[in-house]
Length: 592
Image 1 (spheres, one colour):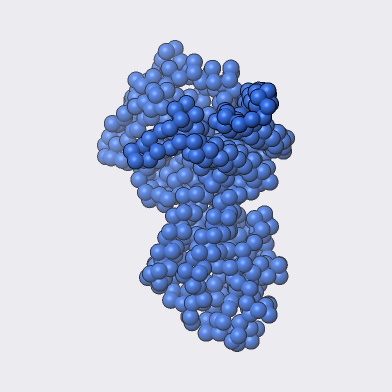
Image 2 (image 1 turned 180 degrees about the horizontal axis):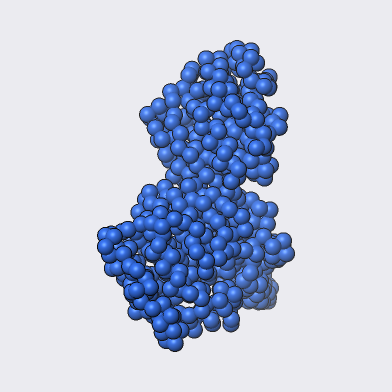
């Protein structure tokens, strides 16, 4: 097993450092471990006490912050696996071997404190608020992003680069690791009362953490921080400016808007356009340099003619505004440059010139970044734009039907388990299988593996509570055998959820794929058949033995979702070969 470096940043921890080091030494006996203490400018005996129990003790002359101490420790570490541990005795070292074992399969292992009573109430509230923001904005799979015990491979730290020098370092690691989609897992840990006085200042350090979070979101979530608000400001400003340009004065209750409001709305149009465009360009840049995984917006910017359309529209605006400005100048000059009375047309023409030039320059810059993304193949695995929209609609529909704490098996989970990642808040465990998986992944307590789904599912009989299969049935050569395998691995009373396109979607999907190239051509080509509702019900009940099946449509009737249950009582279990002749059903399905 690769060597592990346990890095313990410490500042004035003379009361806690010896028990912490003794705990680490005892719990890691038998592992190839080096223990590194980084004394971050302590004024007590932390360094002297640590020397008797640590392999390396490094001391900063002055206090630089927890993040700086962690960076110093990492630079001195020789291990392939890096584990960070607080020096205050709050985290039992008994979890370090578990972290090391999990690092054989994943890139990073987080921990989640299961008992919160030893955290001060104010800190608890701050943790809750920041955790909610991080999980909502980055897709963090864990439940405690501010935990002070976690481990990662050396390659992860090399990739993300530690920049924060303060207590915000945990926030930085979580945001970067989640946005870059490293394979991650989490283990629950107990949390003990700290030894000595806390160095965390809730208001000061909370504000620092929040500031770092906002700074990181500018790069790792530019669509939320730039593109979305910029687009809303731009569209609202266009709407208001159009009304004022036509009517002159608009009244909303006691609010009276006139020429000054027109000027303000034009300024906000420029602000909104710039903000939205910067968001798109940052998104392409961050994707190109592997700061984040591509989103549906990234795909649209890179693969659809977005910047070409922006260029053409900008040229059209310039073609109108430039002659208008020339005409206004000519008419003013022809009157001997006397009093200028065409203020509103002049302002509108100047606004057109400004927006047209901004759009033109942005289209050139955006096309450069989009071309760079395509040439570097950083989005070669990402689905086309509309595929992602449809997939997200499926995910939202199915997620509502999944009970927390279930043992799940997702069949056709994709190469990186996108749907399973979206279920991280439900605390599930289980499996995901797909033929496109290149290497085994771990997402929380869910293992994702490669499997040709025409084969036997490598799980024991009656081993899972729930099976999901989204947009897979239409690709299978033998749907009966597949559904029977699902029946086999489900526990009695277990639930099977599947989605598949409705027959009426065939022409639309083929048009979007073959004509407009807005969805994957290969995916649509691979569709073996489209199942009417009654065929799905017969496949589930007569062909496999499920009961209480229901099939409903969604996405304007172009998609179907089926839910079926395995019987509770063993007496209701089906001997498939006696119940129905599989070949007959196959023939009927293929002929219909």
